[in-house]
Length: 380
Image (cartoon, rainbow, N blue to C red; front, side, top):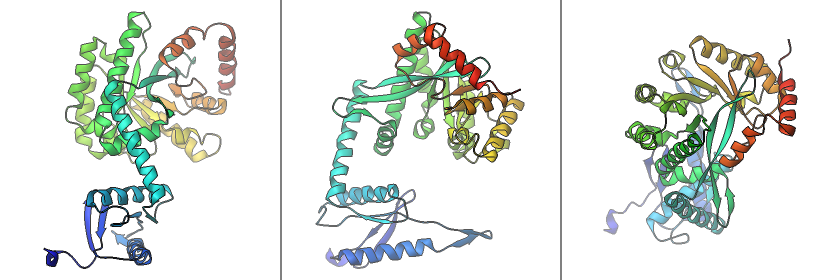
């Protein structure tokens, strides 16, 4: 058996863009660092594709036996964790798994267990951020945003628990929870005469699921909610990953009466001729472009072009991440249809949102709204 074991470094593709290097026998930290540096040097060498010079890099994580663990599964997991740490530290580098990373890995494992339990128990909640018509700043819908109040850690940042969910394969369950909670909330609001369209983000893994459309429509039918009260937000990256499959799912959602918007538009690599054949309702201009209003004329030109193109195709336009009156004024002058961001309203718990909307027309809230409307009025 031992004679069949490799004696030199073995390099193999593990999954996706991840590769594993296995080095048999004992090796010093310096020797391991040398192997890693050699791999990085090889990867960094530029190469040509159709006359274009291509540059790539790599992030490397290293775990050792028996220092870190004698178990192969542990070593792969620890090396993977160290590799992602290398990415977080700036990419194109090497990180050894150590006691500090072990503590971090255990903390993430504990948080993953807690997340599984929270999803199963429905111990998460939705906040809702208003979307305002650009013409008069009236609210014409909300976006559902997932929040997790951990019993001991407090509010867990969405970026953290979403990353854990993606890594642990929990996104389908998490996405289903969000849809069920959003539809249930709409039903509760509607029963009290508070009718508010709700937009829900969809993850790539959730959208790729063959049963995605069927499951979503079942959730809506069971709750007896009008389909046109639910909007599905997908990213342009998701659309272009497999345009044919994406277009078919969008068509099914639209035929069922739901609205569909393309989120984070303007920072991906959309094929505009294909986009014109996608039966969506709206384009949401990415916040990274909105942030550059007043700072970068190219970003402003892109926004103007996107709005004009969308309107020419009969699509609604929404700008997200609006935080200043200057941004809002530019967007209104650009003829944007709706805006969303901290300037217009923070994400709020359901009860807070109802109260906020009810009080917008009176007292201090009304005065603030009047001042805001004046501040964002585009110059003649």
